[in-house]
Length: 268
Image (cartoon, rainbow, N blue to C red; front, top):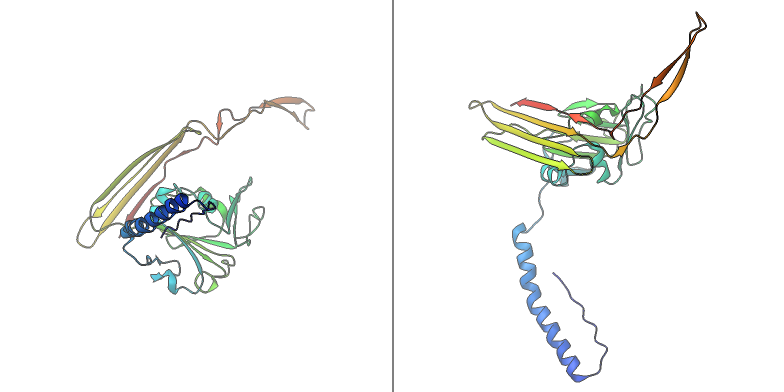
């Protein structure tokens, strides 16, 4: 319901009459506007079903803090990586590392250092029921998802002691019992990134369904440009005493300049 407040400071009778007429018109038209806005929702709250605790249950019945991102929201806001999910989710952050550990994943302020490559993360990442204990998960194909679920807080009962901060569950979309096809093409202007995505899903028999999804990304530009100059590196040969110079060329063009083609197949 929309409530309009009209403040009148004039003592003129004509002004007061006009103000009263305006207020009456607002009160008459407001209920009709509220009904038209609420009609598409059908009343009530939508029941959110999650499977992060290895069972299908309502989010209202889980005794922990849950953040569920639906498939529609993932497509609407182009959440095509865990870093984009972290940017739009409170208390969840990802810092990409320059070493081979991938990234530091932090949930509710708890996380493992990215420099400790030998230690598993305090935030468990579960992809289709498979546990990922390291930050390399940020480089996996992030597309054709059913939803993203986050359980905040220790989850040792279902996922072991490596879930001190919580669990991020990423289930892929299941094969369907009816034929479905989708294709989408997008273009990111700043990085000049051409993206194509699609899937085919349907039954193969009365008891078997299949799904094939593909995503292609070709970034011809980038978000920043490397303006570094070539660096001459002298190398000393201890055996002969000779010194040779090698020139290291920096990566030119837009960065990161990524090219991806992940594919996923599923049978059910």
